[in-house]
Length: 118
Image (cartoon, rainbow, N blue to C red; front, top):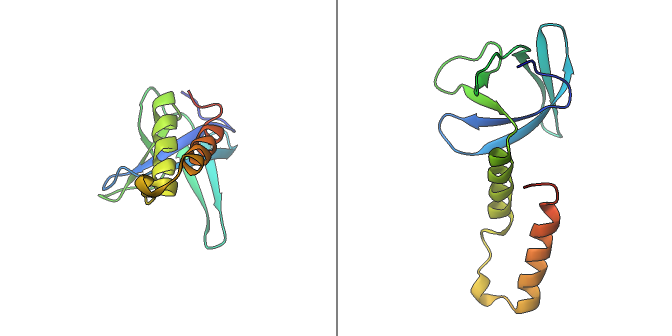
């Protein structure tokens, strides 16, 4: 498999099941590069562009226990990422104390955020 611009990659840490989602921003003949930018951090993650037939791959230079593994997007990973985000957004809510309208609003938000996920 050859990584290319626009492909979605999910990262998992060896010590947790938390998923992070990235998109490959640019490629060179030998590397695929994710450009991570936010208010507090800015860095690139580089991979060999040809990952062969492996389901997991690693960033260039990664080693040791804290090494993060990466996978190309699948429907299963997409659904896990969606569920993880729902739990983070709504996991603290005590549904016993909500009225029907509030529950319907939460379901509307969840369903609208899931468009395109199957």
